[in-house]
Image (cartoon, rainbow, N blue to C red):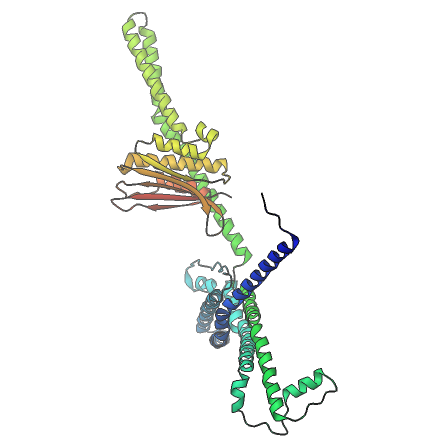
Length: 461
């Protein structure tokens, strides 16, 4: 029987869980304080050096721009700005902030001095980095450093006031007691005397309470100040949305070209295989049937022999057509899915092949299944024909990539002679084009003497 909980017990459990969660959050905040304080306390020297270097280079380059040397000084300012921006991003990550995607820097190399300058002066990221390091980060860094150092020193000074205050000069009659001013302001009408010992004791209590309050708020202050730097860096040092769009357009263009090339390669190969295989056998079959027809009345024995040869030719042509059809979409793949089709490939391979599958419950598009099956079939054919291997292994699994995208990873391993390479016009080059057409990637590890491991990763989205 399931035990019944009364409302009081349930409320106690909820309160306990809430207190534990609050304590855990508080501990996490305090655990961040050393890294955040390290970032903030190092900010002043970092931003000062960046300000001096960048402003000096930019001012010198701008003032001598009409001269040839001024242009190069401006380019040097851009390079320095990029370096200081990279340092800021690394510092933010060390402080525990989320990683900011780096810009897609212009790496296009154009001949001549104009192309070289356009690489640096024509990229908006360089100018934003220069503005960040030479103006914005210096102003914000000075403000956050002053706030952090003031908050920290005030808190520590208040908590330790009772220790170091005894070394201060005696309180003179004309000086003001802070605690007296505060108490008389908070409690109107009260008049405190001039008892030096009592006022000194009250002063110590006031400063200690103030220090404890400021130290208790320190995790929130440091985190807030670092978040200011994080927000500015994300807007000025991060990647543009247009950069991702350009990269996606370029990737789609390359995938389209690769898909067209792979399709053309596949059609040409199919045409060649049909011409060299089943077509030749069918032509011979036609001749044998014609000869048998002519000899049927005059020489039945010869006609029977020709018909038996024709039957053998038809059987071999049928086998070759079946082999060719495996490169498209066998019924097993359509009926029972990719896992069963890969297991069938491993069983039919002439080299003893083990298989490891971890496809989970991910939805795999039919075109991806067909391509993965074709790639596995082609790789196992290469193993049987060229690798001189004694064993092979096929591994297929779905997992999450570094970018958070679900991918299907197919690996074919053999213990053969190695030296497999992606040469133009050969099988592996065609496979690479097919994989690229699916926005995937292929990696080949095949040293001379073996073993060989070929891995393809294809996005499922």
